[in-house]
Image (cartoon, rainbow, N blue to C red; front, side):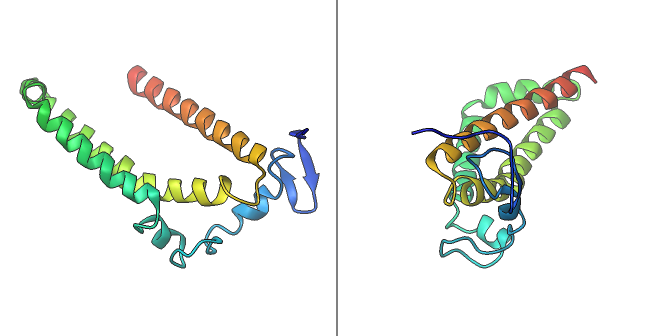
Length: 149
């Protein structure tokens, strides 16, 4: 089996990889219902219990709360430092925003638009690596900015 992952320009627009045909056309249909029985709009699907991302959000927030409770001595130490309460509150707020606000729509987008049919198995593998690389670059840039400003 051979996979052509070269840059292409076909009738559906320039695709990033030959193994991910029609990427631009798929991106233009983001608010259309996918071929799964979810709600009609993108955000309704994203924040539905039918979306594994929303389920993972709640599981992550509950696990985080339990770990925070188990680390209460360290939390108190952080809060006693100068500016510690504010820093801790900002951390908790960013965690909730990242998991509950950004996570479900991104999971819906990636899982139903870029990790499912019509992509080939090789196309889906390529997209998984693209997501991991993109996440890593974003993580690096955010932390570099945070630690050098």
